Amino acid sequence: MIFDIYIYILLSLLAVLLVNIIYKKDFYNRILSLNSFSSIVIALIVIIASKKNDNYIIDIALVYVLFSYVAIIGFLKFFLKNK
Image 1 (cartoon, rainbow, N blue to C red):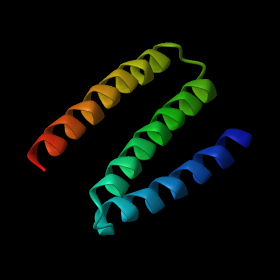
Image 2 (image 1 turned 90 degrees about the vertical axis):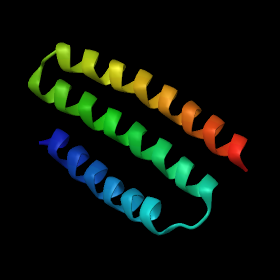
Image 3 (image 1 turned 90 degrees about the horizontal axis):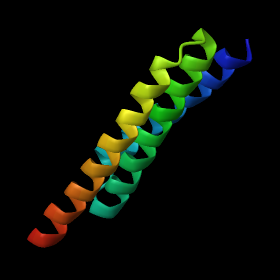
């Protein structure tokens, strides 16, 4: 029951961040929103793993953390080099 409430809260936060990513004009706000979006997705994956009592889903969340970190660093290096 409590996991469902957390899931709905995180999904509403994801919707707000998605709107923020799409409509913000500033590059740094978009990167910050994208980083927050990926962090909330990771939290959502962990909550779903806890709800289902599956440990391999937490491994998927860890892989997603690594990809998210590398992607954000790559975006920053690419876009800051071109400015």
